[in-house]
Image (cartoon, rainbow, N blue to C red):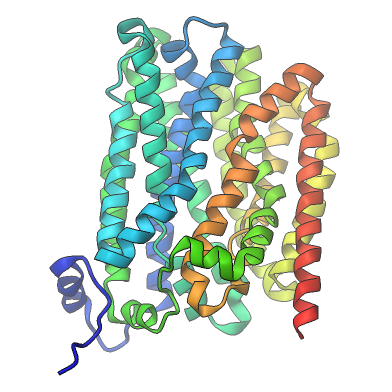
Length: 443
């Protein structure tokens, strides 16, 4: 008698969750959306906790042997390691997914993510253990990158599949809300400890609490996401090869062109991402360290504006389609590149306008950056294709952005930042044009 083929799952965990949550209506888009937002918020919290500490803490703690500017740039170099590690993480966790199931993959990934972030809170500084402290920090950052790739759960794709046809743009923006929520949580915690503690206490132990909190936040996110991925509806889509992992090599052979275009299409968005959040914080504090708390509060308000921009992107995309929305956002980023140098160099008022206007445009762009081109993938490669495209777009557009921006601004002044943003906008428009021509050729 032939043995029945089944997709592997993470032992009894998913089966028990399915029985616990089984009901007549299955998985509603609203339930998927909640799981997506909680999951992405936890990921971006870990992301921004490290990014903010790269400016406020790590130069003094891990690189005290160089000047402050060099220390920040070295911190940004370590920051980039996670983005380099992400494509490797997709390959590793893809194999875990195929062999042991998506629940096992998510559990390992989120514990690695939370553990890597929390472990940073216990690291000694350079003054205590010398270069070993830097190597340990780099290892934790690589662990974060591998885990972020493994945390891909396909929920964004599942949400898109369950979205009403005329509201695809609205549902596409929902996962993106995790970025401003995670940023507000991370910057809010840092702002609290900066305001509550003296400089010595903050550098000694206060900065460690946001990192330590990451583990608890990731555990909550794990259960929220397993609640969805363990349902019968998700399993049914998975088994129909709507959301089934495939080897990365197979994906690249079959649909490498879609991966390449998908990696470059959101380039303007991801360049803007760090030039609104991390880079201005570093630039302002390097010139006036006493402005740390004030600027964190300004960025908190800017993130709220960014939430509004993301929500607006969904409404606009459903009227002009997602590709046109992303192209429009690239044009806005190109326009912002002309104003950015003057605003950032315009004192407190100019810097506030830089952050608020930048977050508004970032929200409009980031809200539709995910999946605009990856929706081109065939059913067989949709799950892995979306993950790998995301890894590469973050690596190309965002991984080295803080380091590049700070280096350019230091060498050639703030106008170089405008050129950097403009180049990202041009790359996005070129990629979208190529994608549009390919679509027309296939009709």
